[in-house]
Amino acid sequence: MVSLIELNGKKVVTTDAFDIGEVAGVELDLVKATILFLKVDLSKQAAKEFGFKVPYMGSVVICIPWNYTQAYGHVVNLNVPLSQLKTLKECS
Image (cartoon, rainbow, N blue to C red; front, side):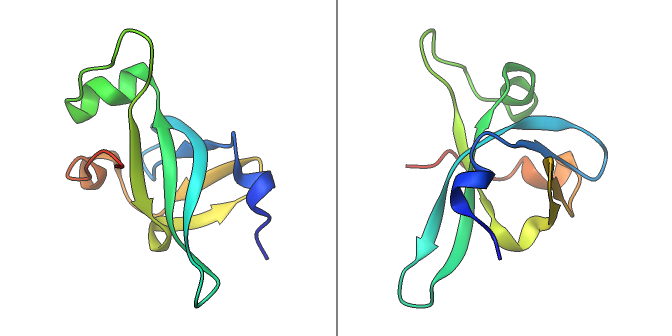
């Protein structure tokens, strides 16, 4: 079972070993008690790769579907490469 507190701040890494950022939170389905999305605070390098303009005092957060998660421990390993994530939008 995943502890939501333990996920916060974990690095998120793609299958092609690209460190995209850190977990900033999750989006839950409260009825089913499941995680829907990881909210990931993109690193500056990842934001550039995604084509986002990074605010001067802020960051860009994207929502990654939970089913893109392969494993988690010291880091969150995704089961997709960076190229597959580039179509994701910023979280609202």
